Image (cartoon, helix red, strand yellow):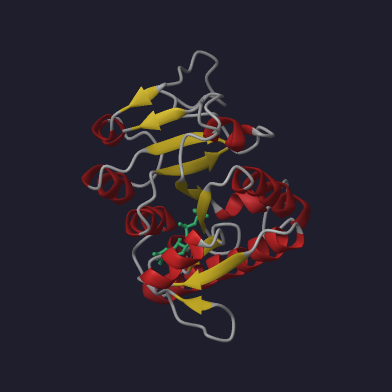
Length: 238
Ligand code: UDP
């Protein structure tokens, strides 16, 4: 019998910007709901799901510091932005019947759970979607690194990086018609060619922990589920 799914436990990483729809800023609730439905369809296959959502739709530390803010303070603001996105995703998922926990790297007990590794693993075993918020809890990091860290800690079989395009290309496919998509590419090639899959520290951490990264399009309806069921186009970084 062919297995109905290719992975049992994965981490989905999306940028904050994925939640803003066609707006230039913030949250677009119908878009959040659409992504929640994609997550639910994978959850329905029995896959255990972790999520990390960026904060770039609200605030980025680097942008703040470029305008004269103290860098670490700006980074904490970026981490708080990810908590808002996580709560929006929690609400959207629970509205359609998927149980979730928001788990923050910075304790905020009135808002969500603090990060306790064994507790998070237990939530996954009980089929709750774990949304990891506040990045790594440290300034100078990104949510890509947080995604790699949490995926490693949770023993995920892969990171699914949802983007606007269906994989990693040798040049920007939006600007170049002759851009070629890689089916597979190594971590070192991604680093050497400066392909913007994730930032370099996240790629290096994934490489050192032998954590595959599946880059796929989140704009393609049913795409996430399709890959989990063994179909569709994507790039495997390994
Ligand atoms: N951030 C941080 N430490 C972390 C994760 C995030 O300081 O471990 C801050 C950082 O300022 C970053 C912001 O949170 O710019 C939002 O995260 P990110 O830029 O990764 O979001 P994305 O680009 O994925 O939307």
